[in-house]
Amino acid sequence: MRIDRTLYMNIRTFLIGFLVVLFIGGVGYKVFERQQEGSFVNWYDQTLKEEFDLSVEVNKAQKEGYSSVQNYTTADANRPLSDTLDSIDEIISATKLLQNQQTEYNRVVEENQKDVEKFVRRAKFFFSNKEYQELLQTLTDSYGERKYIRDVNSIRIDFILNLFEVLRDFEIAQDHYRKYGSSSFETIGDTYGELSSLEKYAQNDFSFKNQEAIKEKLSFEFDVLTRYREYLKSYYVVLRDLARGNYDTASYKRGKLATDSYNLAIDWDRLWRDSDAVVSNKTKSLLSSYLTQWEAVNDLGKDFSSLDLLLCRIYSTKLDLYSIVTDKESHATSSGDLLLDLSSVAPKTTDLDKLVDASIIEYAYATDSATLFTCHNRKTNESYTFSYSMN
Picture (cartoon, one colour):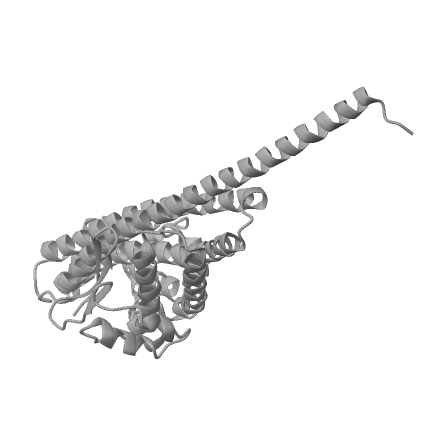
């Protein structure tokens, strides 16, 4: 059977055209895939830098807040009330600044997490490289772990704000008691107007800022706030009864006031302990994700400019984990000594430790100033310094 020559030529032309289109499409796909890979590398480098920049600002705010708390706790106990309130106002102001910085950091990280989700969707069609797939998965995992830790940190900031706002009123009540505690009921009742800031605690609809989240995630810390609220409420209602001449009622309520005062014997060493147990597990998972991420990034063989920052992220996370697990800070005075301390906590980083020296990470514990953790990005000649504590 002979095929008509015209039909043959049509079929031949179609097949050649199809193969050309297929070839061009394949080449075009590879070109587009490389463009997507290059876009991802640029995004990854820029994202790490952006998040480090914001972390430095958060750390500066933390340092300012810590310094103001130090000033409050080490001040002369006999100083005037006005000085004490000014000191607490400084703490509240510094904590609000920290809250703003943390909120901005959270916003940017959430946007970056959404970017990862977009890359994951694109990867189904455009990334045939399994190393990219693995890297995207580790990014997805790490952002998930970080969200819980970020949420806890934000709730802790809410607790600190509530605590010092309540301590401000507590200082007012304490000063009032020192001045009038031994006076007659009538004289004390005449000073009722000095305690107007305590009235809110006696309201049935009173609640602390972000109360439900604090109650859920920080049960011990919420109990601390509740104890202070009960004391200030009792103090206020007793004074209110005295001001109204209800001396018998006031005398009766003084029993609860005494109980509430006794309940203010708080074990401050328990602060964060319960939530740290969960944060510790999340931090371990996060560190594992970062270690897998390091392997995936290096397997790609691309020219990332942020590998030093990824190393710093790994070891700063391990330092956080060390502090939680051991309940102390590293007293290392060099990067080598720091690695020895951190080797005591899992997951281990023995092979990775060989890549770290003072050209990437500097650490210096100090007993009379800030303990500093400095990250160097050798490719960009940029450095990021974090203050871990004041001693």
